[in-house]
View 1 (cartoon, rainbow, N blue to C red):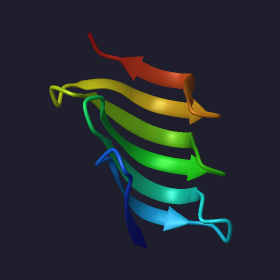
View 2: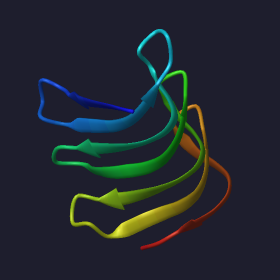
View 3: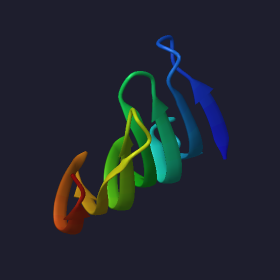
View 4: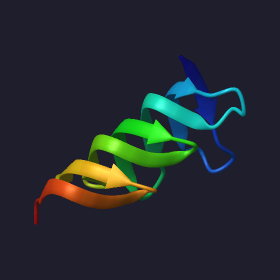
Length: 77
């Protein structure tokens, strides 16, 4: 597990691969955007995960592929 702080102030807590890309399970807290908590592949959201908006309201819970919601999931408004 690693903790990475970006220049923007966004933070990633989780696993990385040999290329230092987000890989496996992790949490990415993006300044002024929201939080993604779930699985990654080659630096992209991929697999099961949840996304909360900047107001800490759950907006999506489900599958992701190549960084986008894809497959089964639930969208919250």
